[in-house]
Length: 422
Length: 144
Image (cartoon, rainbow over all chains, first blue to last red; front, side, top):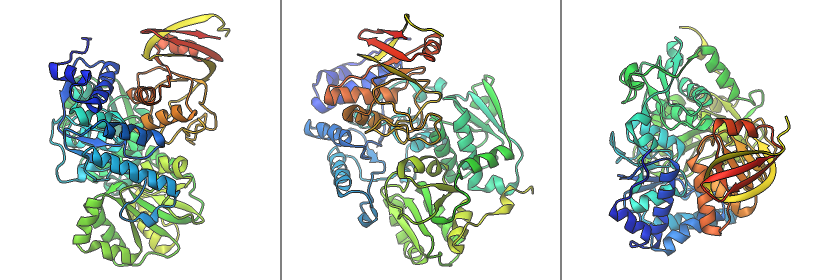
């Protein structure tokens, strides 16, 4: 391993020639470069910031220090979700103090030059990264989507390094930025499953959950899926990044760096092969539904943020019916997508049916869902994984169709055909 | 097994010293969503050691896991007192390292992080008390 070499400009940043904020940022990036064995830094095209979610005084202390020291981002930079919905502030059920701190954090990141996108799905924005482009993205589902589906290159950045990289416009050349570190390592072979299951969001969430549980930090390759939409790949990646530290996956014949099995593995044999059966998927669905025997009080979808296509599907599934007043129905999405559905005339229609749109944040990280007797149904493995410890809410997992039918009927509805053979 | 007097070495990722009761995790935990930053309690219901506290312990864990927000949660735990006294890792985890770096930079509080090889990691599994001296590139760790 060669030691880290910095060019003249990078050394000047470290010396503080470009100001104290750039110096702090360079120190953080160099620290990461050394921790990850990088031999140099490389320029990035864009950044996505996760540090804008308030975790306590450390969040504002860190951002304020950069603002006070004159910090400004050098590359186009988007913001992940925060703790409050700034378009529908009345939805927030946390303390006034937490809301004020979140607003202060939003102000600080805006002052650093970040775009107020407030979405965990920056890949749904119009100017998303190109294939092969180096970027510094934080937020685990966005990272895995950028690498796997877009073929852009980002390591698993987190809070602090995200804004530091944006301020100096550079990241360590290590991990998923390098060709050899993007190759598949562990093969997940999906057994033959019914067409109905193969087309369902349930397959991708449960398969992702299993992959995260068993990948052990290795890059997973999936064989046995012929086609997948971006939303389905989003569900797979989000699930795998929640139950395991997955930064990238390949689906043979589907994702751009895995046209063939040998291409996915760079011509090497898999280190391990894991077969996934319908029974394994069913067991994962059951693991994500620990509270299945209790009545449903709410439905929450849109983790990660709902796309325009998912709203289209939701409208079709609701089919002009009204949702039961016994069940609250939440959809988390980005403000840009909300503006699009408003222009299409869908927003009013969905609201009239009883759908509550949540923007800028997500129901699994912040107190928005009203406490009602019962449990919360979701089609998101990520929501089911994190919501219990973050919010105390208990999950029941199902397909989007099951979520909608449950909300229309006012009680749990199961699509029995999902697990039947063709 | 009696570990009294066993001394192992590791690679210092974050400098510092600590001496405390050991908490050896059977599985990695994600600080974000998995650890309460104020109390140090493991709140991830999926974790086999849920309910135990990492606060003030020398935390031995195979790797980091899950969300990239863990840097903030670890830094906040260091600020508010819910953090471990030190973390010994079986695999390098830049997300945790970064949380410790920022806490040190903002508040001057040091929480050593040390990377262990497989043999050193195995030696820690049954330790009840661990002393960490990570003042130089090679850390010295005494197990008892």
